[in-house]
Length: 185
Image (cartoon, rainbow, N blue to C red; front, side):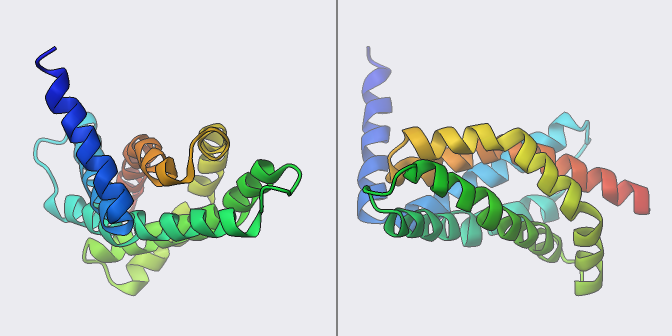
């Protein structure tokens, strides 16, 4: 019982921050989750040392894009599909999968490469090589989780849940990017 009080206090503080400062809270949460996901990915791959450029890139991407863009996107789909729209959640899901995901995946592959210190040509070459297979994998493996996120969770928790799902996606993505980089060496 003594451990539960600090945990409940932490959860209460998080929800208070989420309510009062949603963008800042979502951005910082996304940064922490993305950084942790990248470190876990590097450890799983058997790397002897942590690549700080990669950790920085994922953390910066999470901070700048991972909290803000999904926050505004989920608010947007809540506004355009009112409660009276039949199959509202399904339309929100389709919009997320067919518009948001392709654009967000494109941005993530490009900016992660740029944040790691690569120039435009290298970032674009990585994007060209990885975009379609990564997008297909995203649609294949994450669509069910995305549907559940949109259907069953309140809008205030969607970005957090997407980031938790994203933790495992970051491990997958970092591994694919690392494999592609080894092939070009």
